[in-house]
Amino acid sequence: MGELLSLEAAQALRETLRQQGKTLVFTNGHFDLLHAGHLDYLEKARALGDALIVGLNGDASTRRLKGEGRPLVPAGQRARLLAALAPVSAAIIFEADTADKLILALKPEIYVKGGDYAEKPLPERATVEDCGGRVELIDYLPGHSTSGLINRIRKLP
Image: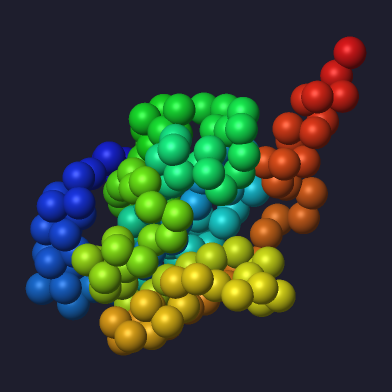
């Protein structure tokens, strides 16, 4: 089971992995209303390396990027849920709109995002590549999205 880390602790974990010759996979997102699609995505991400660190957009960042009313679940709770998942080695909360600073600090070998980024610009791509990493896009599990789940909940009587 993973844990919620500070940036300094995440960097220490990263250094330990590097010394052991292990591959770090990094991803980031909001993970609001955790569901099976998230778990599938994280399992696929973790399978690409030896450890998976998840950057979690904090509450202010989520509000800016997703709009008023989001997140539905506070960052501390979302991070705790993420860290408890078997594929996740560690979670770290950040408040920026992109994960560039975390990527620069951790320099993962592999950066993972959802397959929807095949059709749109990935803000962190240049940072990942400048750090010597590669980007991997993972298809989402069909029919599983937080927005879809929110819409179904809103339609309940």
